[in-house]
Image 1 (cartoon, helix red, strand yellow):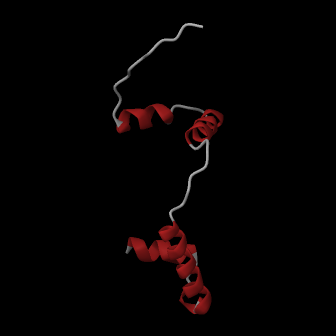
Image 2 (tube, one colour):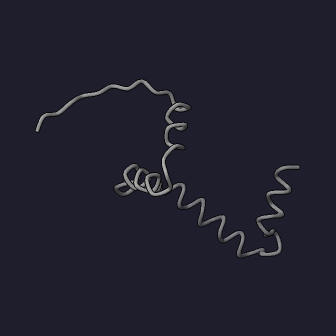
Image 3 (cartoon, helix red, strand yellow):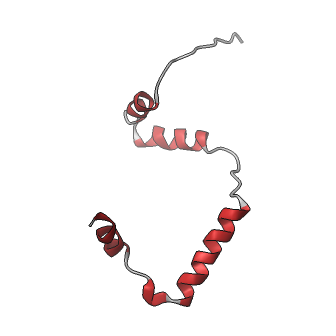
Length: 75
């Protein structure tokens, strides 16, 4: 089989506009191709998430519904 090397100069904005032209099935295939393989989450990030979960469970009254959180962030 012959191979062909192709170099295409695309900035992120152009690439994004091309990806938006794909149908949902093609987007899913692209997503699977991009994220194929394992991605390791750094230990520091894992620790931070676990600390936040513990804090939330310790004081559930501080939690707000997502819709309310969005409104709070937008104001």
